[in-house]
Amino acid sequence: MTPITIKQPFIITIFGASGDLAKLMLFPALYSLYEQGRLPVDFYIIGFARTKKTDSAFQQDFIASVKAAAGGVVNESALKKLSERVRYFTGEYGRSADFESYAKFLKSLKLPANSLHLAYFSVPSVAYKPIIENLAALSKSGLYHIRLILEKPFGVDKQSAEDIFHFALQHFEEEKFYLLDHYLGKPAVRSIMHLRESNRILSHMMRGYEIANVQITAFEEFGVKERASYFDQVGTIKDFVQSHLMQILALATMSLPIDKNAQSLQREKYGVLAAIECPHDPKNIVIGQYQGYTKENGVPQDSHTETFAALRLFIDRLDWFGVPIYVRTGKRLAKKQTYVVVELKKFPFQAANEPPNRLIFELYPFEQAHLTLLNKQEDPAALQEIIASHSVACNVKAKCLPPGHAPLLLDVLRGEKKYFLSFPEIIASWDVVDKISALIADNKIKLELYQAGSSGPAAHLRLPARDGFNWYSLPS
Ligand code: BG6
Figure 1 (spheres, rainbow, N blue to C red):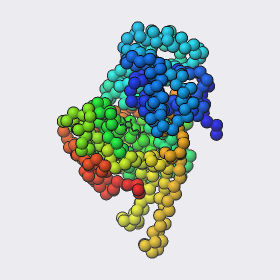
Figure 2 (spheres, protein in one colour):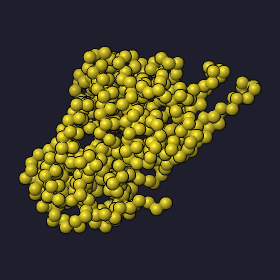
Figure 3 (cartoon, helix red, strand yellow):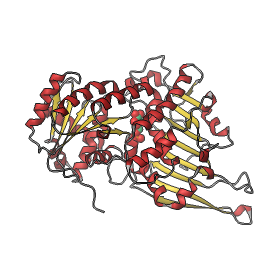
Figure 4 (cartoon, rainbow, N blue to C red):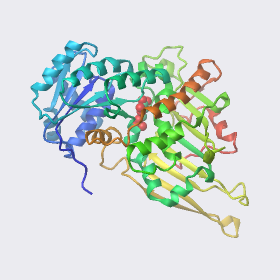
């Protein structure tokens, strides 16, 4: 298949261009698309931020960020050519006069009238409103065809998310918004759905009636790094569970969409997210903090922010009735690993100690799916496990698009919204998270300390144990 390439000229303006997201994710993603020849002849990358900076200083930042992300292995000449398309604009997000100058600056670039204008919000969500308002004023003057990319977290709770969305929709039509969670750009995450829709055998297996439990694990090895000031205000549940894990959960448990379009997929994901039974019982929630977190640069010494969370959830739908869904994630754990385990029910005549059939989607570090089939011989000692393993995407060592932002930027450029979120999905996820946050705020859940490099607080083992199950660990 020929790779997707973009022909339409475009400008991408990155608001918050001096931040981590831009440096760690967006610049490398743009480089990767350019280096693979997927971008058109005419385009510009513009950094818009408050700090004063020259074009050439910003170009140097751009080059340095790409090199750092690629571990120094880059196509030097491609990177140099790309950096010539990079410009910097100093402006305040809330000052309309700055946006008027910015409009003049865009015109001076003399791109064709059919050019797309991507506005990437790489800023905290409190800065969304002034930028949206100022862009709306510019778009009325018919500058460029605009698409707005908003990245998770969308607000800090349900109310702030609703507030942003109402505000946003007063200024732009809904179709102009691309609500981005970079997990939906990862080929392995997309594969959860591709495998289900391409293999009827899997779709049959993955119906709630057939399933004993679902487990989603997303462990990270590193701590808060230099993002403490952001992270300490939100914690793992808002940072990781609210969008990344809820989206994975939705892809694994939704009914298959009847159509291939974005609306069908978003509708099915919403159907699951809105049906998540919130864990009113604090026994269904375990939160933890790694030892040494409060000594990290920028973390208050008395911080109670959780760096680990595990939940026992249910989906309030007939097909999923009584099937527990366990999710767990945290920082400074033994190693980075992301995987989904779908454990199938056993027949009543199967012995309790017989292992169940499992379907495992490994998302990181390897991207593959396994299916365990048991072949039981008359002699109980001869129980055979047949593991069908299929690599569904390139693994981390192979040369491929960096997972996440690059495929999603390509999607925005071609107007494909399938792997973006809908407003209702986001609100439904916040609904769950807000209820958990309220229990935490009421001191109903104890913060467990755990050792850095461990598998998290031992207390989280009790969640599946309540139903007679165990967390599944991938063989190392
Ligand atoms: C981000 C979170 O959205 O995702 C980070 O804010 C987290 O805390 C990161 O580390 C994980 O992304 P990835 O692609 O490295 O798994």
